[in-house]
Image (cartoon, rainbow, N blue to C red; front, side, top):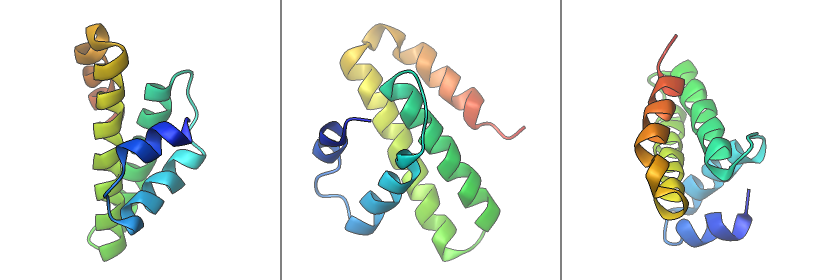
Length: 97
């Protein structure tokens, strides 16, 4: 993950949210930045689901939303032709099994 890219896209975000996003992305694996972002978002969603109605779960859910938004932004900027396909893939990955 390119820390400069992430930092430039999260300027102005609350520090606590930025830190949570960074935490989920630290261990996210993938062949591309979009794949790494997707993996981080899935991890955040899983943690949020485990906490259900707790205040920390709300922050994890916001982090997942932010990371998904970043994943779609990355695709729109660098591979707009695959944006719709990548959005569908991300939705399938995030769906509860």
